[in-house]
Length: 227
Ligand code: T5A
Image (tube, rainbow, N blue to C red):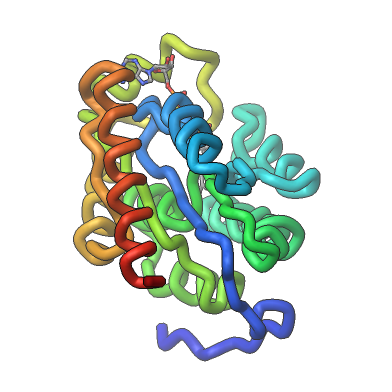
């Protein structure tokens, strides 16, 4: 499909002053755990920030999250994809863009790379459809930095199972999550300037070291450009 350029008036004057950082990875990769390390790093650098997540991040988007992850519903693939972008549209307009425009850094536990990995690669959705929705909902908005926590699927699923009851998507097969992992690695290959792969297999402490090192490098690179 040829994605037609769609004008979205509330995004057209996008001038992000804050930075947009996303954390990605398959189930149990340790994103939520590492979010604490990212928060501590931002606090240590006295950077004003907002921590958020997808699907979610606003009252309406959190309500959509409840619906889309609830195992009691049979959710069609189209419905799942559209709900992810519906939640995202609200999140961007109500929270992400206003924060970025006021100079606040926004850190999101998942964003559109999740859609490419889960709905695209794992469910088998035509990636051009996702690109179309992405362009519609996000216009020019892309993360400045993505930390991709990569872990073998069996380790991630074991960790996730120890944490809490499975949501609807967590009940998918190992083959599904193999495709999710490959989808993420493909995204990293396609966006080498933005996506940093972090080996999420070792202990929390070692993964945290990689996280803070990557953030230090990123800060160094933007300070160099701004100088
Ligand atoms: N989704 C989302 C889509 O399909 N499309 C989309 O567009 C979007 C945005 C969201 C679901 O929605 C899907 C993807 C997801 O299925 P979620 O809660 O954000 O759900 O995602 P989950 O991956 O389910 O979150 P998890 O909590 O399972 O994974 P995390 O956050 O990666 O892992 P975390 O930090 O909670 O850790 C899990 C357990 O492992 C331990 C932790 O203590 C915890 O018990 N752990 C470690 N143990 C050993 N060594 C380490 N290094 C560890 N790091 C963490």
